[in-house]
Image (cartoon, rainbow, N blue to C red; front, side, top):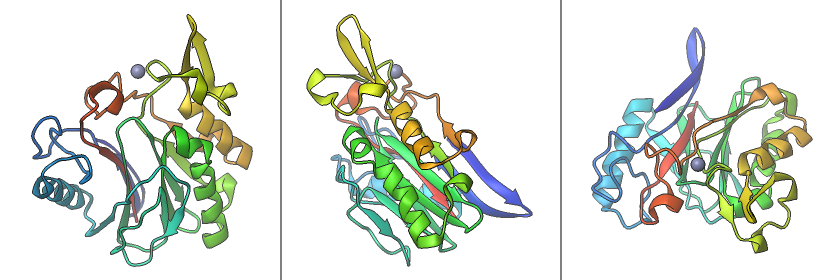
Length: 236
Ligand SMILES: [Zn+2]
């Protein structure tokens, strides 16, 4: 796992991106599959989620029923299981999780107002600006200022592997690479540019250099088709 956090005497926030290791699921979900909807055994997913909660030290880890939309939900109790593609909260003890296998897991932290957020940004969600809407909803809800917001763009399929048909390139002209007549999307750059346009500082946007399709430590829908989901998680 990639771990991080802020420590000013007390641990105020921690985040991580899981890999496919240290879980109990069998192939093709081996082994830390965190998603119920992919065909894995439910009891294995529950055990995997419990292991993650234990590792993070949080009892309330909230997962979304993700639908490639742009709805942002405010989490209050930690018992929610909302249908949406982004969540925000400022309640201590709650962790927010976004599941992916090539889509981008985006994490948000406002250390001034002590608030967090997550967003699920695939091709569709990116075009809907789900990440930018998450940042804006944090501003409206918590008073977050764009220049203070920290953003992590997690492991996800990169331009090296993300070949798409020309019919889905509309809107992505600035994040497109053409090689030998084939089209490749740079979704990380697309989202980075959108955050910069909002006023987020470049040095506050951390982009993982891991391509989930190149790196077999991560689940990849493009590489494996039937597979598990790893997660980006941030906790207060
Ligand atoms: Zn790649």
